[in-house]
Image 1 (tube, rainbow, N blue to C red):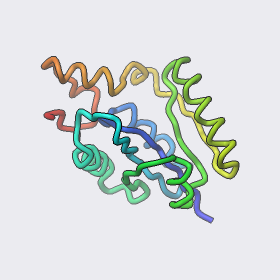
Image 2 (cartoon, rainbow, N blue to C red):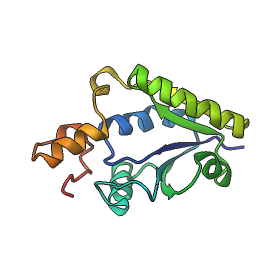
Image 3 (cartoon, rainbow, N blue to C red):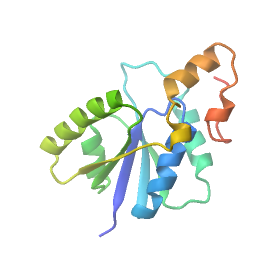
Image 4 (cartoon, helix red, strand yellow):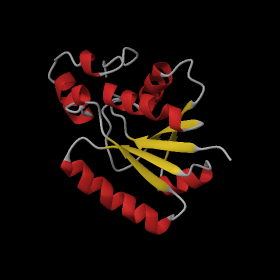
Length: 154
């Protein structure tokens, strides 16, 4: 049985923090699906196509990383792709409380799926997509905080 993990998020945009999490969990799994959640009630700054391409370009040459998008519950996506693990990053205690509640609900709905939390490396812990978008909206240079493959022009 292969060990497949899903790393879900909006990745609007994909950051060096996201990249680091994927790189650090790669040795643990046979496949990691970076799953871009699509919520019709949410307005994204960058197009889905752009976000998918950035992630593909970031992991070009890494056959264990797949990029997909989905709507609906993450646990349903996991089941459809035979993934038994969800990977989530935790930067702050606020992240912990929010992610813990989601993980506990997922466990109640899908006892066969485990959520694994990983802390960012210290130098990446302040990076988040909301701040990156704000920098971009205001004409700043956010390129130090995203992988080289991410072109932040909207």
